[in-house]
Image 1 (cartoon, rainbow, N blue to C red):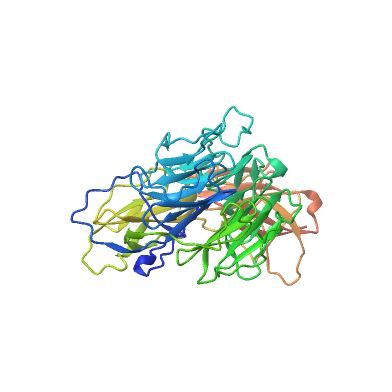
Image 2 (tube, one colour; image 1 turned 90 degrees about the horizontal axis):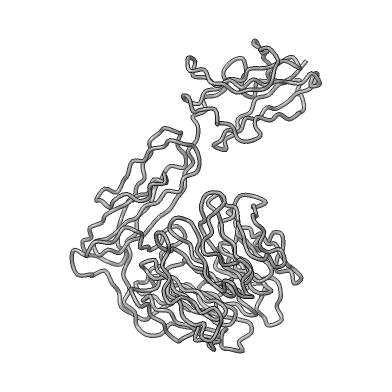
Length: 548
């Protein structure tokens, strides 16, 4: 339920930096000592850059990397200010009776939990690599590592242990890209856009897997009895207990699309792309307003909590509404004190949308600059080709060549670093596909309709630019489906058939062609059918047939 916001703000420099795909980061590669004193800084009033909520308290991260908290504080989980013991915090979250912050070195620090059965660790380092994202649940915390594996901690072995906070949790397929810890269950989004959950599944909110009805999921939020996930088309899907309407099967925004979703105890809120919040579900305390616009500017993040809601504005101020019995939901909450903030470099990240297997491609970071700074700046760059080897070394070239050896989706990355060691990471994805060269005789591609004899075995030949092995077809393919026949269609008889037998796939190195032997059915006489070949890269290719 308590998660992080990734909307960084450099308001002190009168800048609004988009942080949907470009984040200030500290990756595994250590930054070199600055070549000169750090000049790329701005000093001014503090603002909040990120919000982390819990049931009855909130913590927010200031621009200077210090956390401020408010609300219920019986276990010292909500101190007015909390600084990192080393470096600064980059994210902050709250749980039921404690809070945690992610430091810029990838280590988690926690506080609170005084007098409870599950006090949090003062310092938590990742077993492998470092942590990149944290999420506070009802009784514990989960953190995402650089390798896409989740580590959690909480009330292991106690009556509060429902398996929602495992020591480690690896994705069944691929890696995890975002995690959300709940009270009795936790969920994470996989790199293929499927959600995996674990724990008790109270109210059916923690199924082992949950696929999107359309597209893929990009974010998940789990509460006590329900969960919701945001699809890549900006529509929200929910599951679990929904007596108050908090978990509709689908929820589209009234205007535009949703860019973020947050599940609370009995209500859910979504942030629209116009910066307005929409909520639905239990609303006895005014926590689930149908729409809520910011008093000033727009909202950049929303956190649905127990019986209240808070949202971060684009000017770095937090607005809250709903129950405020412990001071957890003030009308507005502003950061205190002055701040000295580093100006982060920016660039334009470019990568091709798709490449054919075996083809080289190039990643680039163009137009590097430090907005708000007029002095001379030296930049260095590092790239991750998405091949499993991670980042290469930093260098002065703003491009990197990459190779391909297998089909599939690749997550590619680039980092631009300035001379002070400040840096920004960009991410993207590309598809590595087969070089399909079209159908070869005797089968013609649409709109031509191939005339064949029902019950015959038809050799369907095509090229993939060389021998790619025999594991080229998606599971369950090829498939055929009956379609209507059109008297006006152009037709061409199939000149070649083979001895009837079982359907099979082979490759001929002499011709460079694959042949799929398609065993047709005698019962298809007098009908037309569409043959669909889906390759392992997800692409589909069609051929039309009429049988006599």
